[in-house]
Every structure is written in C-alpha cells, then in structure tokens.
Length: 82
Image (tube, rainbow, N blue to C red; front, side):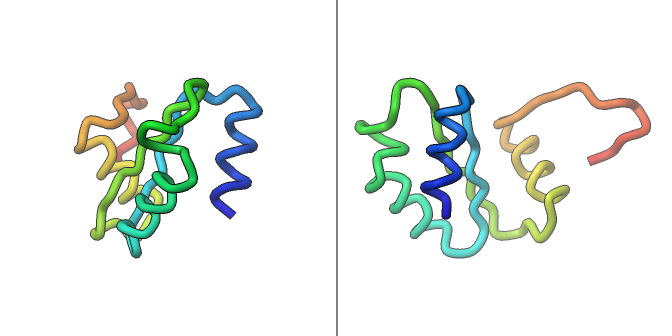
C-alpha cells in the first residue's frame, strides 16, 4: 500500500514526503531502503524521510512530534494549538 501511495505522490510532482512510523518502524525504514525510496537509490525528484516516534497515537501527536524534531515548521493561527 505504501508503494502505491509514494508512486502516486511522485507522479503528482510532490517534492518531499515524511513517512511517520510508530509500530514496526524498523521494518518500514528497511522497506523504504530496499524499495529504493531512501538511501543511495532514492529518486532525485522526491525526498522521502522516515520519522519515528513510539508515543504518537493521533495525527495531532504525530504533528507535535515532527514539529519537536524540527522536521516541519509553520506559522499557525494564534487560536490553534498543537
């Protein structure tokens, strides 16, 4: 399933993708490497980065974890909290 999604994103012209891993993160990272999405065989048109966190249980937790790691940064409306 992840192969189809990454291929579709690449064909759509997406420049950068973050794969957020919780459970089985080692296996996901290994798959991305073997499939050629990361590492030396990675496509030049799209950067794929695996982000690992075992504490996230929701999309908000995932965004907070990525923000805390400095992976993403953005300006939010003052009434919106992560």
